[in-house]
Length: 204
Image (cartoon, rainbow, N blue to C red; front, side, top):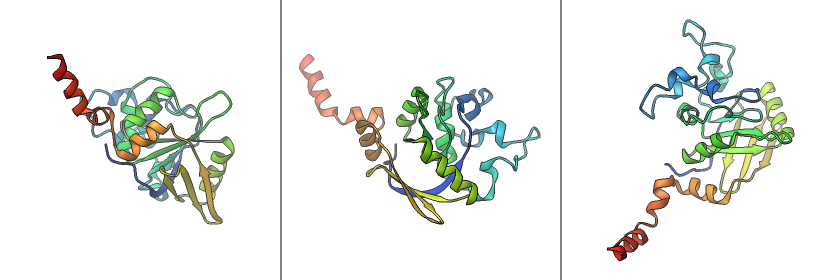
């Protein structure tokens, strides 16, 4: 897993709540035994027409959203089944961070989806309803706006035409450290390889 570095990228917003994993990547794409090639299937029911052509009305097909690296949605993103393919599709499309708001008792992200994101180097950022509303309002006026994501300082800076908007966020310290160091579960365990070997030697 690559180290998560501060970056500036285009923001794309899908203004819907409760986007489930079947919408993120429909079940017909789950037959592959590989962990690659899912980016083209992201939101496929919304991105493509019945004949396979691009749906020009969907945000990811608009010229301003090309190369987007930051996805903004509404609450409960990633609900539904536990398929890890949904995270692979989001990440392999090119997104490095997903932003969503908590709405009362409704979470920003489904727990399993959030956990799978952390294991695949995809940052989930929880903001408030008011902050996400503001982001969508800015996107409506200026599609293709850019934002800088700084995980080290835990700050998202939206570069609006009327001035920067700064949104602090919080990530679990353990996860934050793993993302910054580029450690997946296996790499994290291998940090203690010497201790593990020493322990195994004592058992012989």
